[in-house]
Length: 119
Image 1 (cartoon, helix red, strand yellow):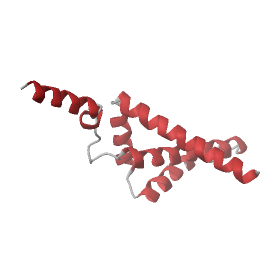
Image 2 (image 1 turned 90 degrees about the vertical axis):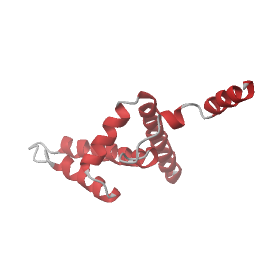
Image 3 (image 1 turned 60 degrees about the vertical axis):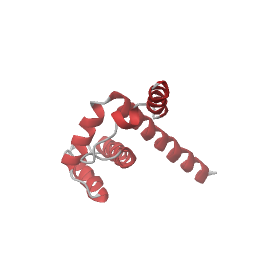
Image 4 (image 1 turned 120 degrees about the horizontal axis):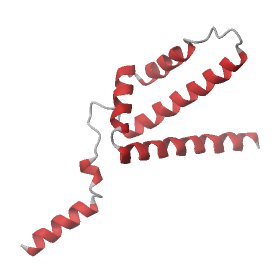
């Protein structure tokens, strides 16, 4: 009996508790895919902001939605799936932090790669 309880405690602590409790349901984007979709969405925003600065007539107001649609199409997802996944991650702070950290790591890798190409 003691060994059964000890094994159960070790199993739960060895799993970190989070891999079962905080797993992402299959109807949402999984962390690895969400990471790259978010990264591309941020890049689309940055591109849009750079164009908007140079457009004094502000004729590009819907251009950011076109960019978002391009990102969604490139991953074969709908905007509804992206935004519902985003809301899911937001409602799970630990998963959201891990997701944001992974997007930041992707940004850092991209920056380092670009700097190496300049040398």
